[in-house]
Amino acid sequence: MAAGRTRPAAWRHRSEGRAVTDVVPAAKAVAVVELGLRACTAYDRPDAAARLTAARTALADPVLHVVVAGEFKQGKSSLVNALVGATVCPVDDDVATAIPTYVRHGEQPEAALLGEPESTPQKIQIADVRRYVVEGSESRPEITGVEVRIPRKILAGGLVLVDTPGVGGLSSPHAAASLAAVSMADAVIFVTGAAQELTRSEVDFLQRARSLCPVVVCVLTKTDFYPSWRQIRDLNEQHLTTHCPVPLMPVSSTLRSRAVKAGDTGLNTESGFTHLVKFLNDQVGGSAADRLAADAAAEVLALCDQLDAHFEAERTALADPEAAERVVRDLTDVKARVDALKSAAAKWNLTLADGIADLTADIDHDLRARIRTIIAEADTTIEDSDPADTWPEMEPWLQARVAEELLDNYDLLRRRSGELSERVGRHFLEASSALTARLAVHDPTPLAAVDDFQHKIDLKRMRLAKQAMVALKNAYGGALMFIILGSLVGVSLGPIGIGIGLVMGHRGLREEKKRQVQKRRAEARNAIRRYCDEVTFAASKDSRDTLRRVQRQLRDHYSGLAEELNRTNAQALASASEAAKRTQQDRQQRLKDVDAELTRVRQLRQRALEVIG
Ligand SMILES: Nc1nc2c(ncn2[C@@H]2O[C@H](COP(=O)(O)OP(=O)(O)OP(=O)(O)O)[C@@H](O)[C@H]2O)c(=O)[nH]1
Ligand SMILES: [Mg+2]
Image (cartoon, rainbow, N blue to C red; front, side, top):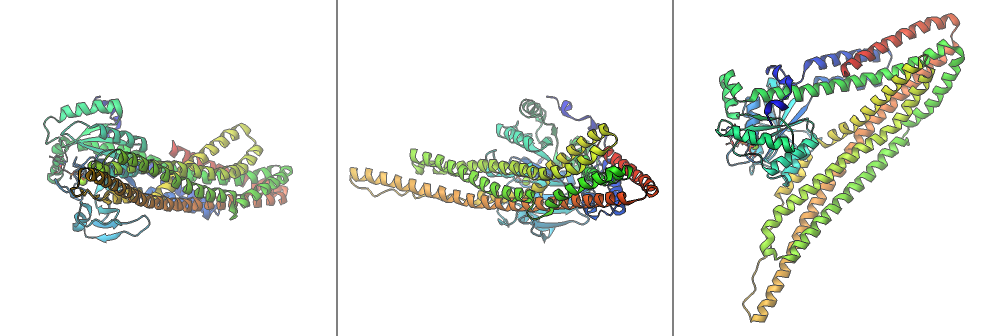
């Protein structure tokens, strides 16, 4: 596989000096959101304005997580330092990175320790970062990461580089932790050194990362140090083409750091980093900017839907006094439905509460079943051997098995939370479709209305699916897996007694040996159970907490939506009722105004659609 074939053509155009998120779609989206906000003021929609303000904030302050992962000592921390042109992550030949470092933009250099999600970061001196990040120093289980802020242009667009601990084989707890982080990331840079070609376990990790994250790139480091890096590159290209088609980029962090220090552009090009920076600009920043812009525009479209529904109702009532009564009747029907959405006993609320309760039980059950399987496997091994011989291999085996099962359990949580959000959202789809559908029937251009109606429904579905991910991302924070799995790395099975019995008569010795083996087996079984109990306790508490946060997020979101639908319906109802009472002349005048409003709403819709593209 030649490198050129997988590289997007856009690489060749952009310059490195730009901030990572693209300004063009963002600026267009900001303009559309501003117009939407003005419409909210004009039409008295503070409820929808809150949503648009949130979209505007997200546009102004995007956050894009790029996880830098790979095996031990391949040069991950050096790569992050070289990218930002500063020594923020400790680099060492002997001591390993132990917890993730989040490198992001800040006006002033500063650092903080991160704890559990929703806890306040604790400020520390930049000079102390090393003490917390590297293995065996200040690391404490409650510290889940270190955040470093520095003023760097490459980070100004919202890029957050996450330097992670080495994974140590695909089936290690750290690999599972990295993959959990990867599942929440916007992109992954997989780092492999030019000392040797990709190993089977590296390719496995890449494959899994690719199934979890939309953008993955493989970076071949230390090209300055290994003269035969081109051969390694070619071999890696072949592996990637066969097993996991992602771009491969050879780089030298050492040359890049030197180039940045000396301001040497020639050396910078030689370091290979120009390609990587462009990739981050185009594939990560560019696509994220497009996505953010599209999300913001979708919020404006949702507002247009509501305004349309309101004015269409009024228009129908004004245009045909006979129809006015029908419109009022229909809207009164819809009112009962949207009112029901607001009550505490709303069906969606029950679906959510029941769904979370079921999910919590199912995830817990799944976890316990998985752990039971591991215990059964361990018991078989113990029964078939003398733990005095097999014990040293038991610990890594157990950690690997547990990591594997935890990751699958977490995958299940992710998938099922998404399904739940969609199920809850369906209650709204029905009610809001009733609001739009009835009015579409009255629309004088039925064909156009059908298209439009379909489009509105598709858009709503799109936003439902997105909401699930947003809730999960906010609830998970991406760092939690590091806590559980990270703390498991520290849990040791401990030694088991290998005592040899006293010398006795021949028969007595055999009996004693048998007794000793039995004792060791019992001890081994107990140690395994203790370990598994700790795992089950930590992991099930984590998923319960996560699901509680997911529930809160979804409840807030859908309550807001219920408010909005109510307001739309109330406004439409008021206008339609009033229309029925107007005089003929008054009606004609108001009809002109409403037509003008509808045209304005359609123009806004058009602009929002242009942003989505
Ligand atoms: N010559 C050369 N050495 C490099 C390069 N990148 C990293 N190294 C060296 O490789 C060693 C490991 O680098 P790190 O950046 O600490 O690797 P890491 O992947 O973060 O290591 P862990 O976090 O412990 O897994 C250090 O001695 C670095 O100086 C490079 O591009 N060229
Ligand atoms: Mg490191």
